[in-house]
Image (cartoon, rainbow, N blue to C red; front, side):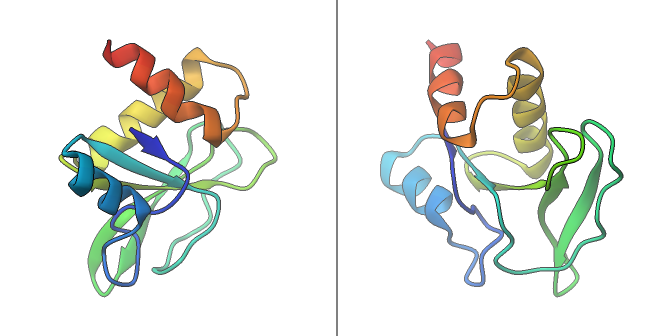
Length: 114
């Protein structure tokens, strides 16, 4: 499930995607439009350019450009999924659908699971 919010990229490592995943016991990913915590270097203005989101010497997510000339999104695992798996899923979903909002990503991901 892709949620419009944070997973472990949260001050307490328990964003909405983590809470949702724990409550429902399904894999969950946080895909947020803004950063709550951590530091990063702005990714290049290229499709799927990425940089590491770090907090206290721990990688908590990835900052990903899903479109050119737009702000990046902040990807972090919520529950039962790794950082790299989370990024791969977001890239695959974004590549297969042109320019849908983050709110629609979770619906498409669910449809692919059936």
